[in-house]
Image 1 (spheres, helix red, strand yellow):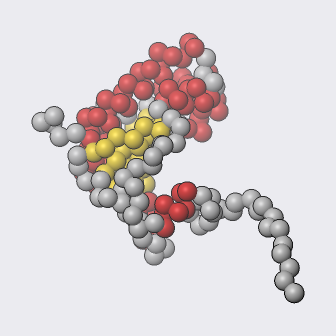
Image 2 (cartoon, one colour; image 1 turned 30 degrees about the vertical axis):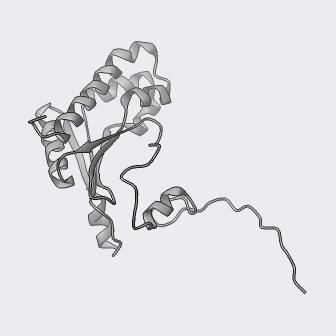
Image 3 (cartoon, one colour; image 1 turned 180 degrees about the vertical axis):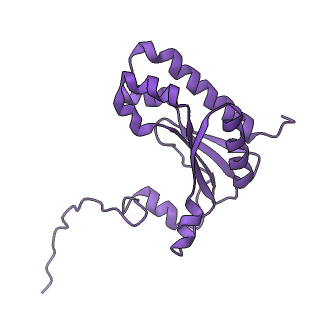
Length: 175
C-alpha cells in the first residue's frame, strides 16, 4: 500500500557559506559553467568588467583609493578563506574603505546607514575567466535607508567617485 504525503513547505536553510539552500546562488556555486554575470544583478548592485585579472584589479583599486586620500580598513581575500577550509573558490576579494568624514555625515542623517558603511567593493573572477568589480551604488544605499534630500549632494559625490574609480581601475589606459 502506497501512501502519498503532501510535502510541507520548509523555509530555506543557510549553508556553511551563508547561501540560502535551494536558491539560485547555491545552484550557481555548484554549477561548473556559471554565466559571466547574473542575468539580473541584485538591486542597486553595479557590476563593471575589468581588463585586468582580479589581483591586478584589486591592487589598482587599493592604490586608487589610497591616492584619493581614503582610508583602507580591510582587504578580505575570500578565496584564501575558502582554501583554509579546503573549499575551492575562484579569486574573490573585498576592499573596505572610506572617509570617516563622509560616513559620519551620512550617519548623522540616518544612523542605520552605518550597516552599509564603510564602502565595500568586490573584485572577482567569474566562471568564464573574466574579472569583475561589483559594489552597491551609494545612491541606492541612500534610497534604501531613506536619507533626506539635503544629503543628495554628498551622496551624488560618492556615487560619482565610485563610478570614476571603478572605470579607471578596470580599463586599460589606451581606451
